Amino acid sequence: MQIATLAGLLRQQSGVGDSLPIDVDAIVEWCQITFAEVPVNGFLGLFIPDPVPGILIKSGQPPGQRRFTIGHELGHFSIPTHTRQAGHWCLESDLGVPSDVVSTTIEREANKFAVELLMPRHIFKRDIDRLDLSFQTVVELACPNRYNVSRTACAMRLVELSREPCALV
Image (cartoon, rainbow, N blue to C red; front, side):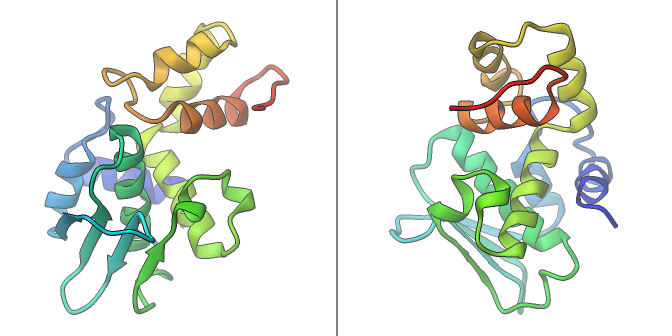
């Protein structure tokens, strides 16, 4: 099953649907995943599959990054091939760069899951098709009352889905 399909199913089955911004905390609760924010250094998030699914994230992350980290860890929970592994320590370098630059397949897949979970293609594409291609559009879409993601994540999604040739520098 494709990652975008899994993310969409999780939004729908959890009852969160496509209401923006996507309520990742409600999804975590619906999945009955133990969740905690802890003051640690060295990683942004950790998914622990056994004996009870759990997600730990570094406390103090900016809201957009926090949501992306949770979405990324939900990817590890949702993607069937990821849950067979002992645990996923997700470093800043795994979550802060475009998916195609990340060193491991599972981290790339979890990033793609987070992007689709938080910025569903069908809604995001509709939004950018009606707006000008500009950094102001990125600011508008990334804001807390729309997608509530970092400007970087929003800009990368805009570049990915834009009809116009563009790049993020």
